[in-house]
Structures are given as structure tokens and as C-alpha cells.
Image (cartoon, rainbow, N blue to C red; front, side, top):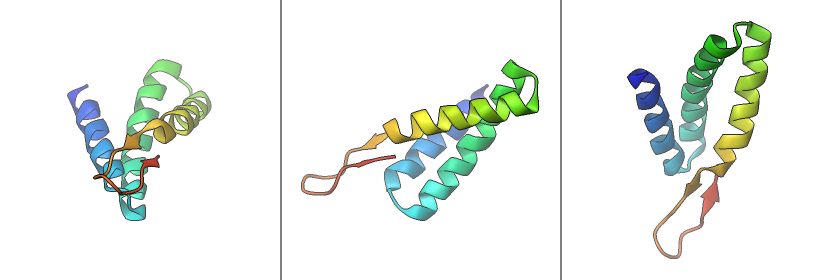
Length: 76
């Protein structure tokens, strides 16, 4: 479980960078983590894939990054 937490924390830090490369890396980390957890819960690959997609679609956009004053705000 601590590995999962570490990957999530790493992904959030990447998302805060705000660049495309960081977004791709964060999504790769989250995809693996969420899929592994979904497989444990769902037990079937197809259900786990559906669950993973739902979680990523709903959670990644809600991560808001606060930039220094005057910089743009971004939600991923």
C-alpha cells in the first residue's frame, strides 16, 4: 500500500509541473496504480479497466495546481 501512496504522491508532483511530459508520466503512474487496485477489487480485467478509466477521467481533472501570483491556473 505504501508503494501505491508513493506513486500517487509522485504523480501529483508531476501534475503540478504542468507540462505535457509530466502529464504523460503522471498518467502512466496513475494508470498502473489504479489498474492494480481495481483488479484487486473487481477481480476481472474488463471491469478493472472500466473502473480505472472512470477513476482517471473523474479524478485527474480535479487536481488543481496553484502557480505563483499572475501565473495561469490549471486543472488536470
